[in-house]
Image (cartoon, rainbow, N blue to C red):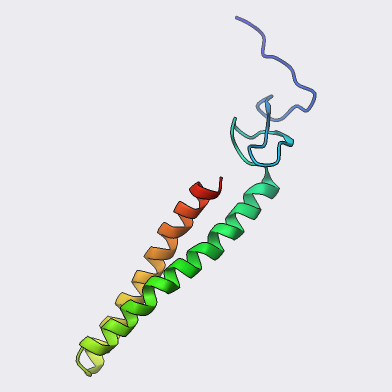
Length: 103
């Protein structure tokens, strides 16, 4: 069995790799991974993009639901719940797509 190679900056698993975004040698990240600072920057940008996408798709849905549902309290509550669920699901999907796109 061959001994594990040593590196100047040892981590828990003994490996250091370059950040895929900034090129900093960071212990403990996988090959092609991001360092902590780059991951935070990408997460903030992805969250911002996701919020805009979610609002852009939720606003027409809310207008449609308001105009087409009857004016009863039960229908309004169900319509509001559907719009909120749409926003949450769309934001999660858009955040994941933006994360993959930005890395």
